[in-house]
Image 1 (cartoon, protein in one colour):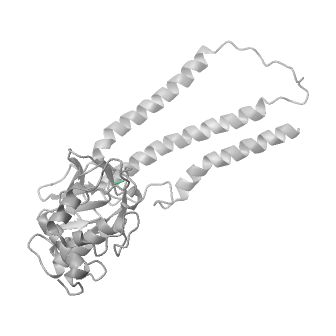
Image 2 (image 1 turned 90 degrees about the vertical axis):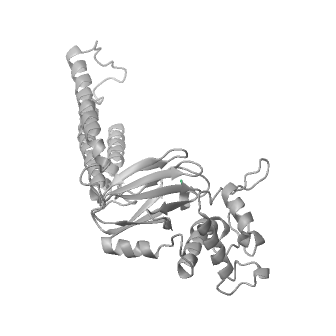
Image 3 (image 1 turned 180 degrees about the horizontal axis):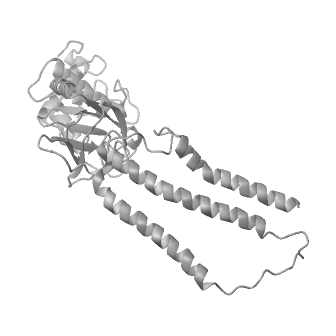
Length: 347
Ligand code: CUA
């Protein structure tokens, strides 16, 4: 009797634990804390959600069926107190009909899942509709930040601004190791691989701010490589793009690009005031304002065999005006500018 109770309690506990993900997924509003996907903001996200719930539904039915049968069998065929301890169960030599059934049913289920997934997966790439006013944005994965380049050369780091209701093509590339761009509300994840251009086609249908991550382990600061996508009205998009520093801008716009570059790239390793963190302190280092030396360092990084300390080629692919913007920002910042530059002014 005691053993029966133990068996029932153990089975019950195992069932509750196993069913927990299902319960969580059903009550979850989505987001990182939950197991259910977030509300989609694009047809691509909608297609992913449909596939998720389709596969989830079938799995839930199978799970409940199997676990129910398991519990019933445990209770129904357990050893009774009247049965001798050394009693043998009935000796069975297979059952052809049963075996065919329990092979065929899973095969049919798997085939249905495979067919539906293969048919629906292309819908994740938003190829349909009028794409004549497609917005092409270059998405560069770098250790350890995202660099977005808009059609007229404007640059933003880690934050991507997109207009609502307009087809978007993201061209993903990498300048060092593999990264993966993933903003769950918008679309599926796509790798950024060196030497290759991968595409993501999507059409944001709702305004809002959507958080994403780098989904491919890419080095020591992989965890601080998140991204944000701000989907705004077409008018706001135009004015936001205007504010982003392009090639010919100087003054405030240039300083803004320089500050963004410092904060999103240098400061992640060297600290917000260049005081040193994962990387060594670099505040007031002469190289910071020596355009040629800085450019070489940003392009090549530091990776000497046998020497501790690795710096990624963090500025590979930057145009000269971005390096200049960084230098102007450093010159304008008292904490960062080398003393001989007589920093403190605005450049
Ligand atoms: Cu980039 Cu992980």
